[in-house]
Image (cartoon, rainbow, N blue to C red; front, top):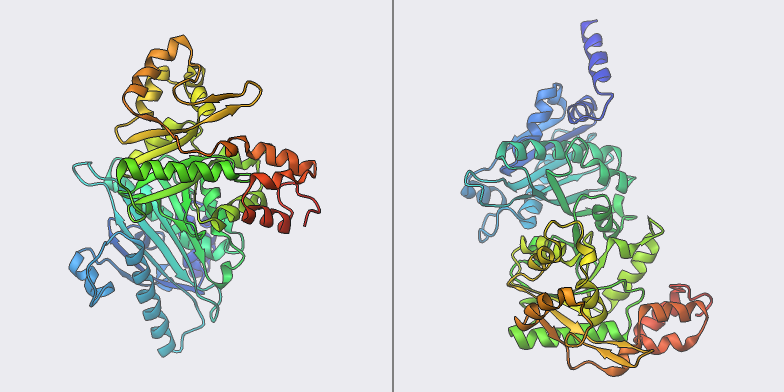
Length: 482
């Protein structure tokens, strides 16, 4: 009788979605069984399952390989040490722990359970407060006792100021992840949002996620990348030219980065000329090569929203075109360039070069855009033009006036002219000079207008690959133009 009352009380306690109640629900589910491997600073996830009670049917094993040599002996035998807080180390942990548990249960003829291996490898803030807390968190699991093996991998940046706070937050995240895969696997966007349950938005940033495996075949991780940005879980997400999501800190670290912002709906000859001439200028200025430099097409969240809502298909159409032409893609929440440079400065890139049209540069010199800053345009330019940041200016053509705008002749207002001259004289704004004049008349807006009018002249403004793809898939209002 007492046992029945206790079970009923525990179930009642598990009715809400606090992290304790999530852990309790998992503990009360006798079909879920797994191991916990937590190295580095993240030691709290398994502890949370123990604290709520009933963990004996859930926790097969916990392990903390804190010392580097022990971590290597368990997860990296026979190989060079490598980085400990890395995706590679996390995957080795998941592979070893899951295989070990699966083999043990098979020998015991206890393979009827839905097993998992949870792992994290984390660097929390140190006592000197001079490092960036971050880590990799993941789970390998099956939804049915004899089902498919799936993985969820994510990278987090930790923003709290004390190590103990970061550890608790990581514990809650781990509980959310384990609970999420067993309750929301068929709803990936719900699973994604649930990772931040009971976690203050300013304490943790999830800047990369991958859902992999047969039960996630319907998931496009590029969409999840945008959802991370849209949901405020990170201000920036990236994926490479093959469409694979990447961790910004790893991909951009110590690289010379060239970035072109736009809607790319679609990218035109002008856009490709900006990328080509911008890269040529960066190569000449910084002696870069393909091994130490990266080029990105960046879209802000504003560029992805239609009447306030996110059109997934339209977004993927644009990305497919860019990836098909070998371009890396960046998604950000930063409308203002100075906020973008603020963020990227924390990633420790070598240099940042922003390709910008002359008309856009003119808008940047207008102080009305900086009313929310106490220091106004002075503060904005101070944050934008860091020592390792420059702007490459692609000329704009004002057709009605037959006027070519460059950084040298844009009509800056008198009140901002001296500030602009100072930045120009410092060499932080450089003109692109080897452009092709005929491409200056191409723009995404013109292409869209012509597409809507069924005017085939739009094809003269985009590369053949782009036009063929648009026709084949009826993109961007190209109705019945196959």
